[in-house]
Every structure is written in structure tokens, then in C-alpha cells.
Amino acid sequence: MKQLPEDYKKFFTAECEITCLHCDFLMRRSPLAAADLLAFNKELEFHVFLRKDKEYRCAEEGINLFFDDQRYEQFLSDFKAYADEALHDFVPKWSQIPETLTKEEFIEATDFLGKLWYFYGFTEFPFIDKAYEKAKAEGNEDVQKRLEDFGQFKFTGREVLNAFWFAGGPIPNILLGVSSMFLSGDDAKFLFLDELLALFDGWRPDPELVLKRREYYGMNVTASVPEILSFEQAKELYTSFTQLSDDLIIKGVTANKGKATGRVIIAPMLNDHGAIAILDSRMEKGDILVAESTSPDLMSLCRKASAIVADQGGLLSHAAIVSRELGVPCVIQAGAATRRLKDGDLVEVDADKGIVTILERVV
Image 1 (cartoon, helix red, strand yellow):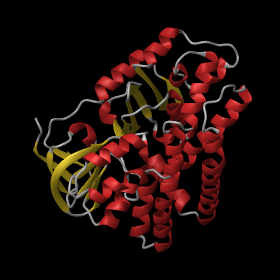
Image 2 (cartoon, rainbow, N blue to C red):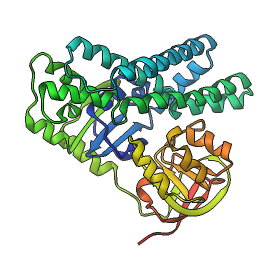
Image 3 (cartoon, helix red, strand yellow):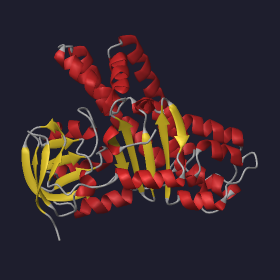
């Protein structure tokens, strides 16, 4: 089945290094795969979309989870135990690039890593928003409070995610260790999980395969079946799905009402604390923070912002919660705002209507 942009909804874009292993975890381990995810990467651009006509599957599962007292309490207990083990045991264990690694150790490590995508998937807006709207419509304050508390716990989940994939974390360290054992440079970053496992059994990739994946790679889920995209498929999808509109109005969803006008500062999804610190030094009080998503590591930027615009996120996302705490306007699910806007653009954020209007573009 041919993938058409009009059939899909953007989930997120990351403008930093996302390995094939990350992509594999998302497509095979995350409950978001129920929405028939599509992901493709071009160099340092990783894009994920979900099918509009399959998103309801996530919404129904979210309602089932958050309205079931016993199931939710067990899920939260398991998630908290996992996060604690991840931060206190797993991350320190893999804080260095391993010199040697057995297949069994690799399987054990990747099994543990992959579990995060299962837990963290339920913190995302396709699972949260409809459940929250249902709880509010029914006046179910217990479920509302449950969802709000879970939204706060997502910050811990994001801390684990960052610890796993930021520079020096377990994912880059393990992949660099595998590369040093079987390949060259950082080639392991461009292999999917089954291919990485095959390395321990003597398989080696065609150098042309790795070379092409450095430029484009991707995966697609159809009817719960994941498949690796060819170079040609990934390239074609990138071209058709990343066309940018030149419209002066960007539409999104209101997370916190209000209006603000200011200059844009773009915060792409970053995996390096040093890069975030540089961004913070450039941002001025009153700027409009435009981010793929916000997280605790971007709090200093949020505090300076007169408004927050996020490409992704839901009603209980970090950007939504923080904007309400800080009392600043916030628009979420604003499409490709981080790519349609540039640093220094003058914009008006009308979060009452959920729109961002470009008033003046930088030359």
C-alpha cells in the first residue's frame, strides 16, 4: 500500500542522531505501532508519522488503561521500578564503551532498552488526550488526577530516555562497542536489531548498505507488521512527506490560552547538554520558544519564553503543563513549526485560537 501524506499525521521530528536501533524499538516495542507508524531518516532528520485512521486504536487503549484502576496501578508500579533500575543500575553499567560484548549480553541489554519504548509510549498524546477529555466530560476527577499525575511522571520517563540516547549513554556506547568488534567507525548505528544480532553469528553487511543508510533509512508498520524500507522507499517518502507550506499561519491545538508577540528561538530535539547550554545563552527574555517538544532539560528556556509553540505533544505534555504553571500561552501539535520558522522571525501566538501568525520573516 502506497503511503500518502494526506493519510498521515505528524508524530514528531528529531533533528539529531537517531540510530536504526532507536527506530527498531519504536516500531517493534512501542504501543504506538498500533497506529501503523511510518518513520524515515535523512542524515540528521528523523521523522515519524501515524495513520489518521488508525490513531483511534491508541485512544481506545489509553481509555482502557487509565480507566482501569487495577491495571493502571500495576502499570505505574512496573514503570517506576523500571525507571529506578534504569537510572541507578543500567545507565551506570553502560557508561563506557564496552571493549568486548557477548551475544547474550547484547540481547539482555537491548531487551532492557526496548522496554522503555513500551512504557514511554503510553505517555504520548495519542493515548492520553482522549482519556483526559473523557474524564473531564464525565466529571471523573479521580481519572483526571491520575492522568495529571502520570503526565508529571512522564518527566522521569524522559529523563530515562535522555540518559539512554544522549552522547555517552548506553545506546551510543553499546553501538560503538559493537562497531569496534565487528565493523568500522560507527557503522553499527545504521543496522537494525536483527542485523546487529546477526553480527555475532558471522554476518557482515554490504558496505553499500551502510553507506546508503547514512543518507536514508526507515521503517513502516502495516497491520501490526513492521518492515524495513529500502533506500529508494525512504528517499521517496522523505521527499513527499517533508514538503513545507509557505502559508503565514501555522495551526495547532491550544494547551494554555493567551496571546504573545515576539521573536522566535528554535529549539530542535537535541541530545547534547552542551548544545542546549549554547541555545540557552542565545535566548532572550520574552522570545517565543518554538520546540519540537519541551522536556525538563529545556526548563531554563521555558522560563524565558513569553509563549511556547511545540510541534508535538498533548494536553498533558511537558510543554502544556509547564506553560500552565508559568502562565504563558502555549500551542501544541503545531505541525512543522520548528522547520517553517527561523530564529529571529517575528510571530504572534494566539493560543486562544491555537494559531501562530508570521508577522515578519528574517532575511
